Length: 205
Image (cartoon, rainbow, N blue to C red; front, side, top):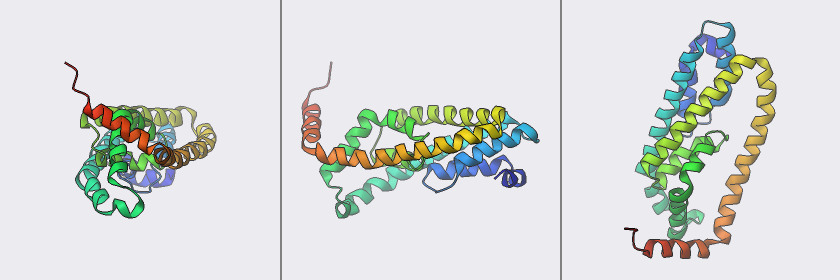
């Protein structure tokens, strides 16, 4: 990966980050770490890497959110029933994103697999744009800056910690993907009743 970056520069890292954010299965995190290490010993400004990486993540967030908002809901409405996504379950998903979407989007930036789908899911579930962009932007700044500087200052030592951490984070992401739908199915009626109660309450004056 370091050799790849030495040939194509910081732009390949930016491309990986942006494309991964909209769902492409690319090793953006590995590319970011490799670029941080490369910046320590070669002609690559760490500030350029950080700024470019943040911009790429933000652009990926914008694109993913738009894709989800433009196509996601229509696809769910048309094909969701084939995979068990009824109208009521779609309502629950939208309610969950309204209530907890900001926290999910922030945390998802640090979790493999969920990082690929968070922006599209947020757009699909009609998450408030200002909440999404605030949470996603903050996560992008922390993620890019943290990984870049850690790789820059610690070098190869960081990779020894990063690999086991990536395995743990992947396991957490898989657990979330499996657990959340199971919890929704288990408490579907209760969640729908709560959504109906909240929607029937008059707005606070």
